[in-house]
Image 1: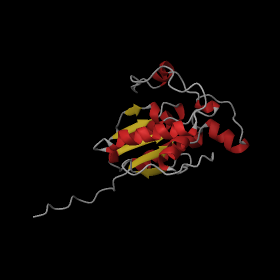
Image 2: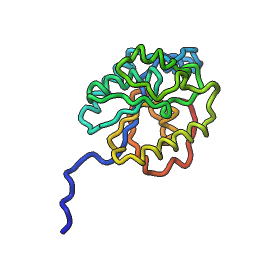
Image 3: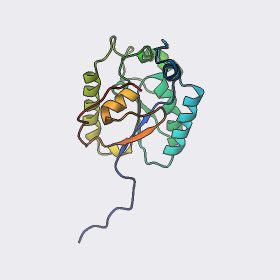
Image 4: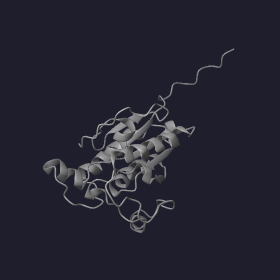
Length: 198
């Protein structure tokens, strides 16, 4: 006899959340010029977007939050982690493509001082690259992350707080600040990633 089907549950997807609006996004959207802000913080709108994401995710069965070490991602992930009662797993693999001043990060010692409750143990003091990253390198990083996630039995219970470029490299889709996207790491990598900046 066949076993009864399990009770209805969310379909198996991991969730990407793009960080809320940063000071860089605000200026860049208005001028299309790099305003020269290193590791920008969220704007008041960015904080609102993070709070909305925390509300939207409160009912989901999330067991793991992976977040990029950039301040804008950590500030977005913090209210979500609080709402879900989960720790943050800081992972440089999901960071933004290094292409603008905003992609210069903060050293780990500085991040520790700002987020004493977060573990930064597996990360180098300087974890961002020194020169602009070619698109292929970001896509290779996304492929590596896809393989790492697919190997986890509970990947469908994972939230990844990341960036426009990394989410694009993983899914082939462009997302706005504070928006979420479901992804399946066991699916094929996008055939083509079109790098047109938001």
